[in-house]
Amino acid sequence: METKVDIHIVIDRHEYIVHEKELTGAQLKTLAGIPEANLLFLEVHGPGEDQQIQNDTVVQLRNGEHFFDMPPGNFGATEAC
Image (cartoon, rainbow, N blue to C red; front, side, top):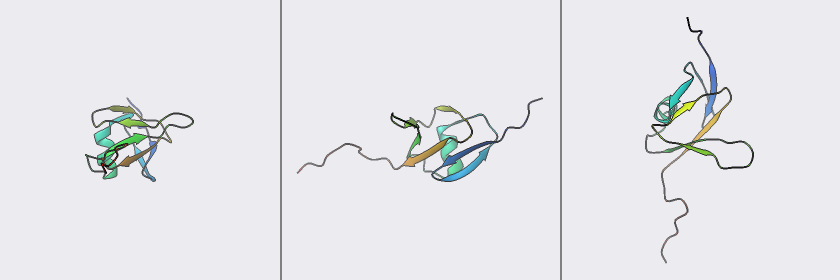
């Protein structure tokens, strides 16, 4: 018999307790009420870039992980003058 697991994660500065050891990006967005079109990221501590989580990516959840979202956009694009 599997023991119930409480995993504490933070999405956009709100704490959530989940009982699954893995969720997809889409499931994390649904949990936090994030629009499906927004980009979701896992914060990476130390040097390096935060990891973008696609909607169909399965994330192995660990206590204390922080996620954040951003609206879709043209990152790095410049406007024509």
